[in-house]
Image 1 (cartoon, rainbow, N blue to C red):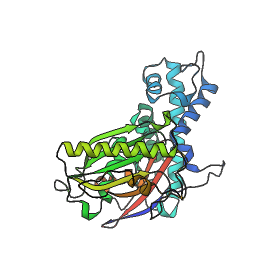
Image 2: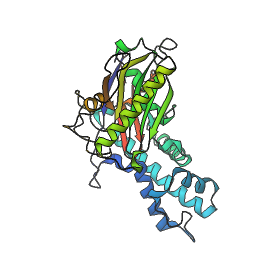
Image 3: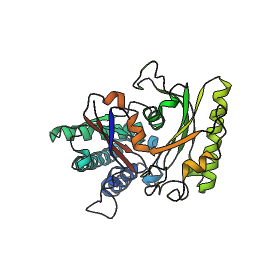
Image 4: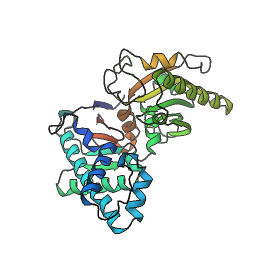
Length: 332
């Protein structure tokens, strides 16, 4: 990309106090584990969440107790938020100690957690802790809807030959959902992609269906073909291009050597998602679509590139089922 370098992504820092990775301490899964612990240790009287395990609770369930529960119930949730914020600060500090994150002063927080009240509160508390520690780090919540950031970010990666079209298709694959959308880059309105938007999208919560790999690829192809047909119906000049944002380390040929364990079925190499998906896609404008793939945190972070132009080094942490990460350098 002109003017920007991707310094790192999918850094897997071993957890010195556990068997997993450091990032696991600051995921949505980790928050629910913290909440379970706090409920057992600090709850007085009746558990505000009943018998449900914390991993069975929706974000709305937790928000309702945080904002509208009785004082004891709200206190329990606040304690969990405080502990999670401390963990997030520790993870931020450990990432900044890595060579690829040296000098990073702005970090975008993406993923699904900022969509919740408790997630936003945890990020604000983490920011105050970082400020008190004189870390020089500022946290920014993703300005797009998290469901759209992993689609819009492909505007920055779109090959030059496809920039003359009105729109293109993009996919964001997560451990719980698969989202597809039609992205309108609107580069004539803003050459840096700041005006890009999703004009139509579809979502499938695959975690509820527990599909095999073949079923998941077939369903994804059907979603994309449906969006392609929709674009023809409204007279949109769709580029013969599909960008896929996917967890894990992505090789230059589109294979995933590691990090795809949360996806439906075995997606790691030698399986080749772009090739398998491409064979199921309808032609677009009479042409076989080009299918490209990159890491989901990289793509979501790139959706914030216009807002990060004044920063020399910056990064992104996506708080979802796991913790995605990427760091960048603006070259000019």
